[in-house]
Length: 190
Image (cartoon, rainbow, N blue to C red; front, top):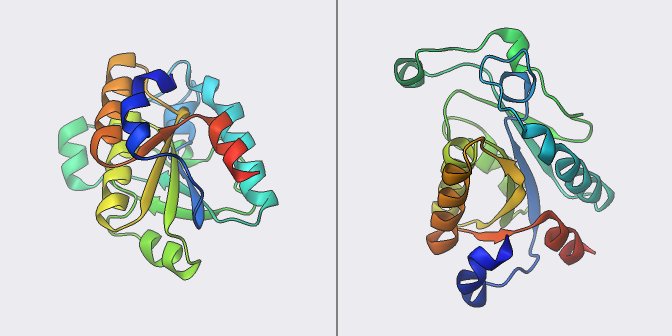
């Protein structure tokens, strides 16, 4: 997949600064067949997420896990939907992670995320999770405008429509984020 971002990576190579891992909305609503917004195939990214979490834990680097707990009024109007409490349950272990609850696409909006990252001295975020073109992309753009270096881990993000996934990644690569694979990130963290 990295060939799709070769041009952008020439200008912005992957390097490790003071990073945190952000895992966006890996919860029953999106990641379990009982969730009403279940994304068939999302299971493909879970092993990559676990590998990233293990490495960040081992290196004592911050891990932030966002949970979409309900929809803001605007989101309810747009999607005509809201979450049931069981759909907010995470699908990965939160051991050693900081949990942030949100009600819109952007994990920074009306949350403590920026303050938490700053308190750890973080200047770089590795963003993963679901849905690539909605919550992941919005959070990545928001991190960029808050002066964080942004890396989106392409094979640790998921959207059921490939077109949305790749279009979002290409847009982010053009103006907001470095796009890297799990393997590249794990190697760089060694």
